Length: 226
Image 1 (cartoon, helix red, strand yellow):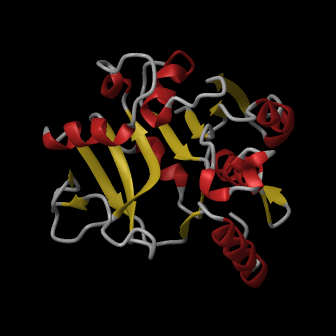
Image 2: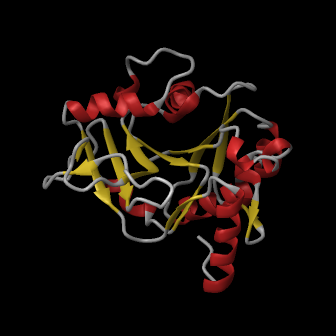
C-alpha cells in the first residue's frame, strides 16, 4: 500500500514560524515534524510515499530528497503557491497513488498509531481513524456504530485523526482544483460506505506554536519520539 503525507497547508495558525518555513519542516525533538511521520510509516512497511506541497514547498523536496536515507521512495505532488485543500490535493496526486487503496496522513499530527495494521484493513470507499476529542475540538466530527461504520450522529462523537485509508473510487466525481475532503466523506458516510475505528493511544494535532512546544516537552519528558 502506498502512503501520502498531506503537507501543503499554509499553517496560518503557526505564523510567524511558517512565514519562511513550511509547517511540516518545523522542528520538534531535533527533527522536522514530517520526519517523525516518515520514520513511523517506513517502520510500518510503507516505503512508497507521496508528499504534496504548496507554500514554500520546494524546501520540502530539498530537505527530504528522494527518501533514500529514510528507507523510502518519495515522490512529490506540487500544487503551486495556492494549495488545493485536502480532497483537491489527493485528486492531484492520484496518478502517483495508483488504483488500489492508499493511506493518507496529515503532515501536522504526531501519533504512535500502529500504521502497519492498516495494510490489511478492508476498505469500501474509506476507513477512518478516530480519536477522543481534544480540548480545541470538543464537539468532534463523527461517531461509530456497532458494526465499525462511521456515522455522522453517533451517541458519542469522536475527532477524525487525519489518518485514513481511501479507495480511489471515492474521488471519481471530484474535478481537478480546490476541494475539501469533509463534504466528500459525509456523502460517502450517508451511503454507509465508510468504516472506522477508535484509537486510544497518543495523538496530537500540532496546529499552533503552543502545541508544538507541548509536543517537544512531551518527547523530552517521556523519551518517546514517534
